[in-house]
Amino acid sequence: MKRKRYIIILALLLCLAVGGILCQQLFMQKNQPISSEDAEALCYSVLGEKDEATGFSFSFGVTETIEKEGKEYYVIRGSWLVNNSHMSYIGDFFVSMDGKEMYSGFVGDGEYDMEDLIWSE
Image (cartoon, rainbow, N blue to C red; front, side):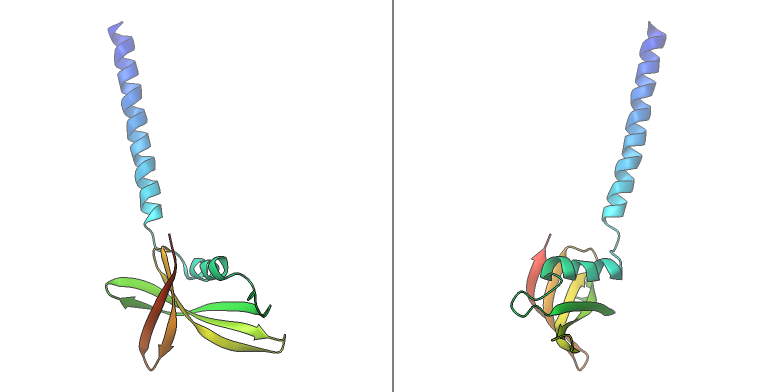
């Protein structure tokens, strides 16, 4: 009887240990920075593939990374395809590297103007 109880306790401890490791791995993955491709995909997810009013297709591309107020962001240039003719700049977007915030804004003369929070987790 004691041996059976001992085996059950060991099995429970093993399950807790394995579960703890799995939880730790999941937590660590959740707190990893997103990739630049994920940041671009988030722009499409939030803003769509096309502008609703004009029907122009969007294009988003990461241009650099910055640190602002102690947080890192991908800087993403936004453009759209005008009348299937040419690309036109529409603004810049800033996606936090943790993938939890997206701001609209502009980049110019080395200044990064994050204007409005347009999405957050």
